[in-house]
Image (cartoon, rainbow, N blue to C red; front, side):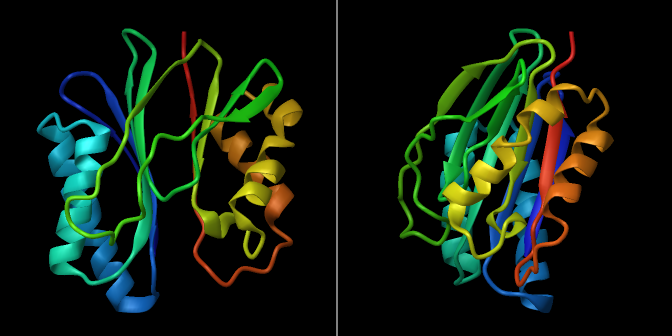
Length: 194
């Protein structure tokens, strides 16, 4: 069960999340619904990304004995600061001036780790025109996180010329649509405005 979400917070910050729980069908859908509701509630209460993932891990450990991964980003438009944490999840990809790179991930075990697991938090200053791409590992199946990021980063010249987020998604799906999937995959694209 993969998910993505974007939510404007009362502070004016924007929450961006993607994640994936093991399993399929009703059980995975139920788990995703529970986690997404918890993510939104904690973010609305001001919980930062690392603490949010720690609490999410505790909730998953107590309520749903399963594993998964998640990426939680909080963007402050006033300072253009992206604060983020990962729970065993691929790092966000940053595209700037026709090139792309994966952000350096802070430490964080997958969801389903023993309660009390710690999650690091990182910050990145973004610029007007930057494109941020969050994805689940199911987007590029059976290739591993490094191969998935490599294929997506190779799209940098193409994404540099695109201003509409829908066109960014089309570029990603055009590149990856021929791949046979056995897992859910999702992508969230955000362009930083002026």
